[in-house]
Structure formats: C-alpha cells, structure tokens
Amino acid sequence: MVGPLLVPYAARLLDGDWHKAEDVLQETAARARKHARFLRTRGEHVRPWLYTVVKNLVIDHHRARQIRPWS
Image 1: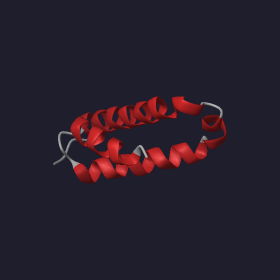
Image 2 (image 1 turned 90 degrees about the horizontal axis):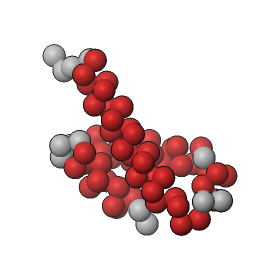
Image 3 (image 1 turned 30 degrees about the vertical axis):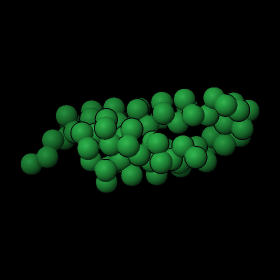
Image 4 (image 1 turned 45 degrees about the vertical axis):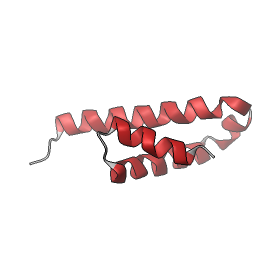
C-alpha cells in the first residue's frame, strides 16, 4: 500500500501540514480512480505516477498560496 508513504511525503513538502497532506492524498486517490484504466497497464510504474501527482498537487497549492495569501 502506497498511501501510508504518500502522506508523510506530502506533509514534508507542505512544511508539516498533515491536514493538507491528507487532502492532497484524497485528491491523488480521486485522480488515480479517474485514470484507473491507464494505470492498470502501467504495472509497477504506478508508484512513481502517484508520487508525481502528489508533487504536482503540492506545487499547485504553493502557487495558489502565492496568488491568494492568507490574510
């Protein structure tokens, strides 16, 4: 199971924000379900795909925070 490894990875990228990391994991799972047909053909290459999705979602989060910073 990759999920328990992805949350700490996302939290590390999010400066320790475990709640946001869990949100990122949920979005990653939704994208994995959306691309299930494609992922079935990837075999052992699913894990790098999942880590890439997490990284990209974190990058999107950081970019959004730069545009709309907390008050």
